[in-house]
View (tube, rainbow over the protein chains, first blue to last red):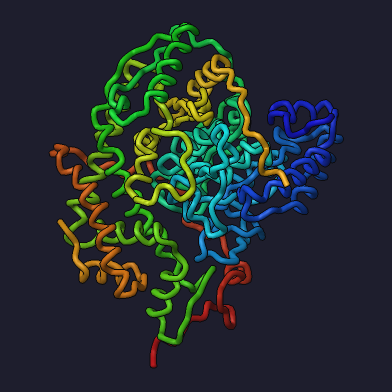
Length: 492
Length: 95
């Protein structure tokens, strides 16, 4: 086996089962590639020793014939997941040195199925961002560059370390989390596949909380099949999360039948925004044509409250964040700044030093919209509009099976180029509505723009119907034949 | 609605985040920019619309009221910046 890194997750899994190569060989190849790609800054903590120990256990299980579905598969884990005795910082200074004494449910599920941890991937601090520039370990660089350009681009965010790692082939797959688009937008920016499942499909237990009514874990991978395989292991009911859905987890990989004849695909007219670049509009039309060719029926639908989704999100998410992040007080874990000024002074100094600019901004907005006298005008109003946004989807899904939209309004932009907070928020214009409604959605690469950078299409499904999303994703993937890959300029 | 420096100081205190006087004005500017952008929700008629509090159509699960966790104080304290005699330690509160 000459090039382990070229294998997809499904191919590696099958090769390991056939004993064509060992988990140890695969782990060695990835550990070497990870170390040679430090220029990307995708990993904030590398765990090669753990990887080798887990690979050895996988080899034993494979030899004994009792290997799990992910035995020997090397993964990157977003820094938002608590991993036992391994640094878990949400890429924030306020969690400096934090090594949980417990394992998140989602990562525990992956290890139960035999996966191998390569390390923790960097992210926007507390998952608040669309560029992975705010990680305490420094910005992550997208493996992709424009044709003939040396400019460093962002990998999207907040799961940008994960998307960069998968695109650079320094992880076979990775975990992400998505609150308003943090799996799908980075997947679109890096030519990878990302799934945000139905809210409640994956347990939130042990995932550092940002906005609890929106946060959902999901996979980032190279192919739709790979993402489906990972999602099956990550998902499942967990009594430790009261919002975890108690429903059977389907075999998502089996949904890839390729047959979408007669399926109704909705095209929401409100997603045709005036600011949308022509190339993205054209790619969307191409996606529609592919699905038509495969026998799907295209139906125009309306989601009338779409234009209010971002503003709704930027009230609800900061409100929940201000509450969730109240726990970082310098008492139980992480950073403490104590200048001898007493307890209240310690809280305020610790939080001033530990949180970055965007996190502080969101905590303050959240505190304001929840404060006496403003709660009804902002927070209650936003929760009401959220109802209307969710109803829009319910109405649309009375006539269609799945929705097709672009994932993001642009391709990857340069590091340091977007400094205005609201301009940054607009990255999530197409991903936030499905988050507010708790619906499953996927981004997959469908083409390149003029600069040679990947563009993604998004599929949004009904509650708990990831299978249709995956099935339609598989059809687009085959029609698009997306085979482009970034040149490995980062290899040292 | 526009927020002034005193309001920024007040919410920063509520949020327990120390902000230098010099940083108050820029922060007020940024917060006002965001708040005036979210004002657009006022255009939406929400009369009689219930707030969405959960996207999951399920009742909160119940379980027996018994102790199911605990008994590992050393794990709980393992990451504490300061722990003494099996407790979290903080600066003196009462003079």
